Image (cartoon, rainbow, N blue to C red):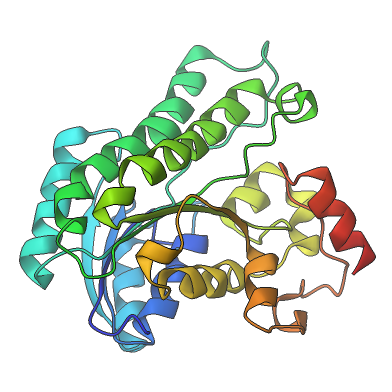
Length: 281
C-alpha cells in the first residue's frame, strides 16, 4: 500500500516534522493540504504554507496551502471542507500543530497556558471532529497525532506542568478516539520521536540540544509506515519512531543522525523501559 492519490490534511505543515511528513507522502503522489498559520515569512521561523506547497509539488504531490489557526473552529471546518472539495475527500488527518513553553508554574502566564491548551489538546479535538465525516468515507482512514505515550510519572510534569498537560491532552484524544471510531474502521494513533528532532521548536526553546537532534525525516518515515497500513489492523497505539522503523526492518539510523556527529539525545516523555532499550542498542 502507498499514499498515491490519497489526501492528507496536515496541521503545522509549513515546516519541521509536519513538512517532512508531507514531503514523504508527496513522493508517492499524494494530495496534501497544508493547514498552518504562516502565510508570510517570519523573522525567526523558516518556511510558509506557500514555500511548503512548492516543495510538495516539486516532490511529486499536489498541494493546497491553507491559512488555518486550529484554535478557530470555523476556520478549521472551512479548510477541511475546501480540502475535500478540491481533492474529493480526506483519507488522513495528521495532528501536528503544537505550542510549547518549557516553563514552571510561576513562570507560565495564563495566556501561555491557554495557548498551549487551545492549540495542542483542543486543536487536536477540533480538527479530528471536523475531518470525521470525510474520514468515514475513506477506504483506509487514519488519524495520526504527534503526541507522547501516556507515561504518567511526576518527573514529566514537575518541570513544565502546563506543557505536559497540553501534550498529554493530545494523547488522551488518541486513547478515546481510537476506541470511539473503531467501528468505523478509522485508525487513530499517536507517534512520538525517541530522540529530540532538529526543528524550530528545539532551536528556539532548547538550542543546546539542536546539535544532538535527529532530522525530521525519521518521524516522517515512521509516519509513512503507519499510514500505509490497513486502518482496521492498527489503531490505539502510542508509537515511537525508531520502534516503528525497526519493525519495518530498518537497522541503520545513521541517515537521520545529528549533523554534528553527536549521539542523539532522548526526547521528553520516553518511558523508562523504552529509554533502557535504546541505551542497550
